[in-house]
Image 1 (cartoon, one colour):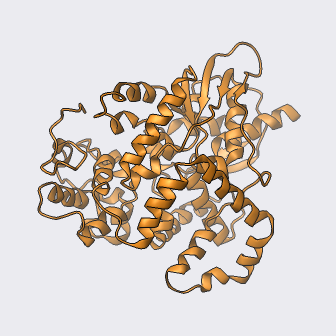
Image 2 (cartoon, rainbow, N blue to C red; image 1 turned 180 degrees about the horizontal axis):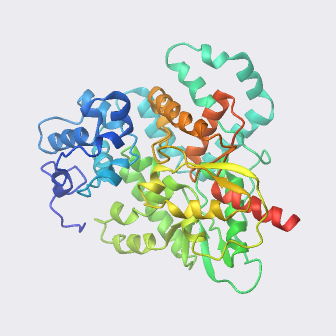
Amino acid sequence: MAATAERTHNPRLDVPRSFIKQCVHCGLCLNYCPTYRVLGNELDSPRGRIYQIRALSEGRITADNPKFREHIYRCLDCRACETACPSGVDYGRLVEAARAEIEAATTGEKVTRDVVLKRVFTSPTALDAFGTATRLYQKSGVQRIVRGTGVLNKLPGPLKKLGEMESMLPEIPGPLLPTRLPETVAPRSGAATYRVALISGCVAQQFFAGTNESTIAVLARNGCEVVTPRGQKCCGALHVHAGERETARQLARHNIATFERTGADFYVINAAGCGSTLKEYGELLEDDPIWAERAHAFTQKVRDVNELVATLDFAHDLGRIEKRVTYQDACHLAHGQRIREAPRQIIRAIPGVELVEMAEPDFCCGSAGIYNLTHPDMAARLLELKMANVEATRAEMVVAPNPGCIIQIAAGVRQRGLPMEVIHPIDLLERSYRLGEAR
């Protein structure tokens, strides 16, 4: 959409008026919406939220209306409605623009926006400190004591959320201090087919550094030179989803400049939620006369790692993994990026793996960025629906292409005491390569 596109009556609402009018209120999205499925409330459906956004744009309600805030933020922004919509409504952009109009109302919201999003997630140093503290908490044995006593679950009132947050922490492998990824890795053999720049992520690098290492190894095995540029920052996905669009734009400009300098053919990301936002930098900066063209050029090079690997001759020298596997479609890969087959292609190529599809694999698990922290009750209800489908497959392994999904489903596996491993498809592929080498 060009920068000159007609805007809504509310000059601050950062979306063209035509986006709102594109919804014909047919209701085909309703059964695809997780919150509508659980609550049955029209105002918690995509159609209902678009009606409220139109009322905001026409001045019939204000952004500080508590009910408007409740319904807009109860949305997971999973974009399943976009897949179902016959009119092609860009719902994700609508709800994110609406959130940008809503000021933080509670102390918790203000801390989340001002401290967590604007300070911690914009600072690699702060993220490293957070990651190190979390690993220390786990490796020192303190976590085992805390969980054993259940002390966090006994905290009163708002402090109870600490227990809910702690229960979601995944086990973080590796050393106490974070290891830096190599700045350049040559292809394992021959000349480089592609020069690829890795977007290492913020939470991903702290909690899933092993997946970044697997990503580099898989790409190098398949003829790619991999560079991991120093100085890259958070992609801004959490900021966009929370309505902090200006902070997201600042991060986008920084990352575009950083990755342009790599001279890479592709910019690769292994986190589906991040990838969706990275591919939308062009929209985020479309009204910026200096950065718009550069942003669109950047998005043309962004690839989810599954998307890129599936185009390579990757099915070679693979070792057998005798596992019954099911696959979870990450919302922002299936609905946001419309990528479904590439991860399945990778899984099916591994000898010994039996891929068993779960019911509704693209129905949101309840993670949705930090939704499982801000809306733990709704996230828990969605996780129950997801885990029932997972358990019905009798799988030994759940494969998911997004860190948030892995954390959420792993929590569900722990709660149910299931003998399942939850793993990224690229970690599974690298495991197969290593078994092939050992053979």
